[in-house]
Image (tube, rainbow, N blue to C red):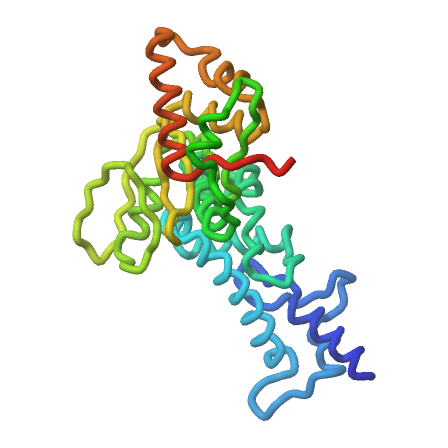
Length: 292
């Protein structure tokens, strides 16, 4: 056996998915014995068989991947409990193996995957999906680029046909629950957390994470970065529609129409809200020029 063949055999066995009991599989995909295969290139020790020796590496490989994803989804972990969460992540990774040199991308598909797997979340499935979406939005907001925002001169020159863009780090979420309350509750005992929300929350001193009980309530969030902190800012539906239309590359006239197409607000109130939305977005540096 050449060195390259040895490396490939070991990589295949070490990366083979664990069983539901988090142990090494006993059978290869073709039905042959994993132990028999491993014995052909791994020597036993005086205390462990060839299979047991390699199982240590197989388990540690998967435990490292599970831990990497867990670091990005602490609130989802707190919601489900460690045992159910680890089972969820193991199944997710079986269907979504690593395709990047960076562990940062490992959990990218989890929110959309979780949407189709309610067997892991039970009665709180929709809330769990919302929490997962919010936690991944945090990763995107923290890592993505910041572009020079529009200045007062740029804003003064805007016309109904003007097309704007939003900061790359800015994430827009339409959620079914106030998931930011769950995320903040899961983080509240960690002093180094750099996430902030403008939602009013009651904070109690406790060594145990107590997650709030929530009723379904449509919640619109902007997740954005400011001075290396990620903020979860609640906005109303019209603001969400307006920002979404900007993100889609619509001209300002269409942006305003989409924001208030189903609104029953008086025109004067709509005008005031539009003014507030743009002033607020400009102050926070959310608005940038298009790349075109």
